[in-house]
Length: 253
Length: 296
Image 1 (cartoon, rainbow over the protein chains, first blue to last red):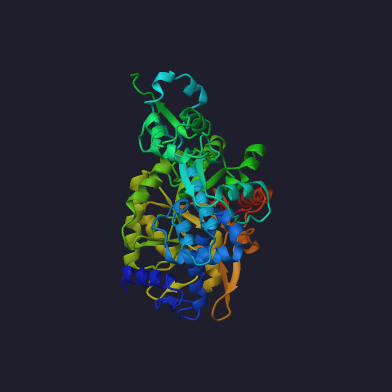
Image 2 (spheres, rainbow over the protein chains, first blue to last red):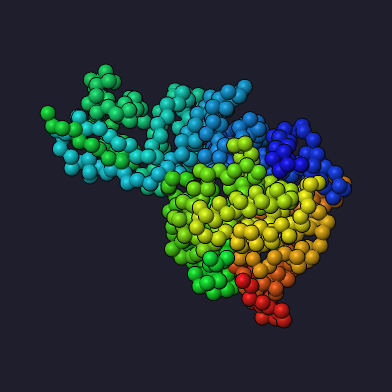
């Protein structure tokens, strides 16, 4: 049998739990062996479930081991990795959770935050700007300045208090539980090696999003239509959290 | 080009025993700085852009030689190698400057889907040619010799016409690659397929071996109720595997040896104890052996 045909049949049977073991495989009795072939099928499933468990420790505690494993198994069955790099596997898992019947919205939000955490953890290394560097800039050049964000930065608008749930789960071993409440905006950064998660103050998310899309500080602030908004405070907050790689000073008018 | 750089003065003198590096053990390693021959890493775990994994690896590299073990290149695929992944592997090899580079006689990717396991292939003239072409490609991309690891398998293929040991010998002859002798895989496959592991070792092209792997396995049964060992890397090396290892060392002489423990990780000291046992086995095996040969 051609090599390609054999491997194709093997791969097809791996992906279909109800399929018989491939006809060309042999156990010790000289025939296809269900339990032997199941080892491969099980290795694939258990491996992918393990990747998702490692990526989502808090979601797993919220859902409980059995429910999390069942959802991870269903996801792994429907989403074969497209790359051998497992640190990137599971990016679509939070949206998959959001689409599962009976899953609390907060659980999918916590999973989104954990996804962002892993992305930040593995992001490119780059030095973050310091508050000292910010202070050294002439105030005149700030309104027209633009911000280059650190490559690890992730901004999340969550419809639930998932960032608080996630943060409380870091502090204690009690099972985390989803709580009722208003949504939160989260900022994930990693100025050195440690990932940080901050809950942004009101308007902070919209401000940072405008800046990331290329607006100057004054443009981003004016777009918020809030005379009380102080872009300086928010800028210091972003720099302190390690979100800013560099500040490109604007031309003085 | 040398099959194993360790034998050409690039690394500490034998007995050179290493362990698989796990981030969970990082603090114990940097705090205690144990004497060890090398650490082995899975290449795919260091293909992220940056961050803590790279920093930890830099700290390990400052103190120890590295062995780079790929688990995702799918050398045993009928289709072409994933060129993007091959370039990623070459980039990691360039960055971490490993003393050894190895991959598996197995496939894991088919039609773009990655199966996250080391899957078996039939041993035929066709598969021999394809695997050899793939190894040529890897060695050209990396500009160095790689080691190919013998697999542990749960099934064989009706169309296979080569013995695994002959298949590996012919690949090494055609490509000039070295071999990574995984003694636990020999034991697992021997139990699973009912062959004599000593005979397998006697038939194995030991002259090409540049590294040895030792690991633990778990046990199940097949449809006929016969024992089925699973290459789980989740437990201590079995006594039967230590015996096979001693036999291999008597014939090979000192050979870089790795303790692989990837799942249900033990305390660092437990892993180190396994490494010390391998070091003692090398000393004993090479001092008493009447038939010691310097391989390569």
